[in-house]
Image (cartoon, rainbow, N blue to C red; front, top):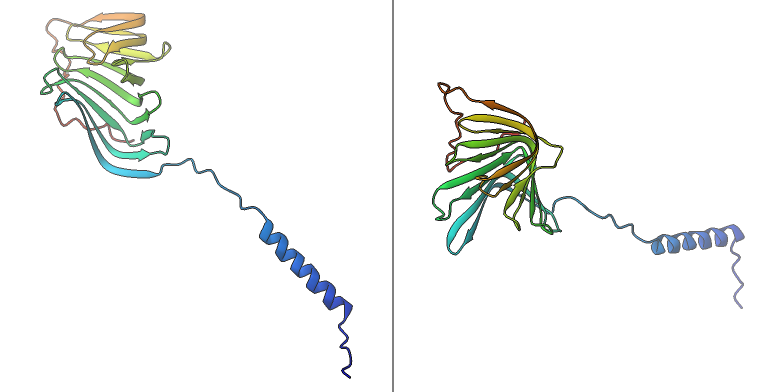
Length: 202
């Protein structure tokens, strides 16, 4: 007849506690981190938008960050070039040190030394933030945003602006000043080459 082996009580208790601890650790739910950052980054981006086989808009940027929502961010600057009806000559450009595209609104936000330049009319608008609505083919700023429009004959200042896509027509919401250019003074340069690049990041 075999004799029963004696096992110390403290050993049984320790083993039970260890097993229970491991079981609880296995049941602990894994904490899921909701990542909000970009899912893809692309350098030296060039996007072409065409309609009826004609180039309409061109986008250039040193860096594009794409998000799961379909939004895109251009942290190192962006340049939008709008072509004429024939798709051959530059009609207007928008440049800035930062850009963001919101897919659900089809809306571009441009910030930092923003310049909107209508090449044929040699007129430009300077501001710190502007929006380009692709659905409405319009450019605008917030009503309180300071703007300056320079043409070959005058300089206009104010707050708030709305304009069509090629910046051939615009309206200043709150004009604050008009300065006439001297006849013998050269007109402000507004010629923008087809290879316009975004303003460099400071």
